[in-house]
Image (cartoon, chains in turn green, orange):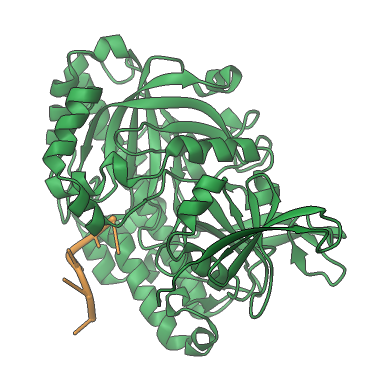
Length: 524
DNA sequence: ATGTAC
């Protein structure tokens, strides 16, 4: 269903009691009220269980309202148990049923879990590996480096990984996550300490992952995949918060490596399997939802437990995937620079998931009836701790200093948040902001967000031209399996990552720490 | 995102 979006901006004076000057924006039949700078609220009405919020500047809101994002955001508020408010982040765009750049915090006892609100690429995420090299150390060696990385790190659609193995080993990977990699010499203890959840979700249930999914994973452990996934060597160009950058071990001109990929065919198969099962078994709930793509399993049901266990297992698979790519990257740097990776200090800064669902306890505000409301709502009279399935789809956990889940190395400054931009733009490291728990269930943006579809991108750009331009004009060396992928991922198909990050920083949900700029990039 | 789609 496509709907024509019409826009009008009106200023209401003295309406709604209290606010003397409230800006209201209308997009089709969706109304957004400006609460304050960068905060837009879609009031609860009709079948909505809660209001929704869009956290965006005006230019980003124009882009967000350009596709079905707002409609999907409103639909998601009808999921049973949706708590306080549904969230759209500054990089939001439409996805399968639920916006990419969305957070849905759903009661884990009385609500539901919805695979579409987590995404097909379970634990698609990003990690940053540091080095003690500077840009000067690497100048002149860019092509040798990009060639060596491309030759040694499997990428592209289909099979071929760092290890090719059997179903029993896949099962162990699903069960133990990066601990498996540690035992087999692909990781060191320190890697586990610098990964979200220490690289292992204890709730993983490999028995809930189908044989078909496991088979797809056998030859994909340690592979980038295709689409927007990449490995990029970058240099730190700007430092915004010196004290936090110190705690993270980041300085200007330092070379770092960004690895962006997910759970490949295995995670995709887990999502497909459970969407089908849930659609069938919970057709009654599905019939009440405004979009089939939001299919959900009621909390406590057999399928909710099985999907959660299988999804957690796929999360572990993705972490091992990024770990094996890290291992290969260290080997390549050893060969190119003639020193051990330990001497090159190729330590993991952090690894964050961008597509994930997790049980977390959050303090929520409640009104006089005990209903959860946004924390700054005038109706809030008390707070309660609730256990929630926090669905983050194209959203990064951004826990501030003090939250127990933040690894001890960063507990005093806040969790590192890694936000990749497009291949011509560079990326950011942020830290979890003090207001993230209050506004976004401890989350912020995950990237620049697409501006146009892959098909449209291929009509606008030709891969070879994009590649030549990046090299000649920006000294960025790109190597890919397919020219089409370069066109699909051309810098021009993405929103402005600087604007996305500016909004995150100004909202206080994720604070700017450093910015990076690409040196070379390999992709599917 | 993905052995692009029952």
